[in-house]
Image (cartoon, rainbow, N blue to C red; front, side, top):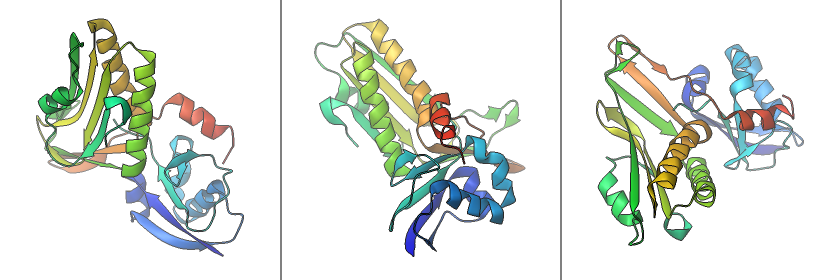
Length: 237
């Protein structure tokens, strides 16, 4: 037998009633067969399978991935919307995000443009009054994915540096949940990089949002990037 740790996030955590557990499995168990085991225990998971991604040891993995002793497995529902090399910054924080300080760390003397995007908590969702939000993430994997996205963007656009910071925990109305900063010699690539950064962060990084109202709370339905879902579906369930 081998022992693995299984993590649940977002709405999946609510469906199974726990955030994590450790269990013993026979050799040769795959991620797909492990998920099927949970689907038999929690039938509501079946309907969500097409939008769920798997991770093994903080890296995306396919359903036919064979597990090993002491692996860490994560089942990831659709995402809702450290410091890297070369001066880029990628962080997960639990306190208020200081966008000005982030700019000061990233900006170089040769930069003629700095674009700052701040995503803030609004007071309603489709007209329904919101009291506050809560964010959670698969922290180690989220940092790695943010760094990967940021470096790909830095190679795609003529920018100097890029920074991405996302906040976790409870956020009140008007507070910033995420900040993306792009610095560049010229404005066009800075705007393009910042837009690409927030768009990809929303669809590729394992961060989940829960909205709270006066009469209840819901996990926000999100959407994985199509490429990630396509890669996963190639290997079946």
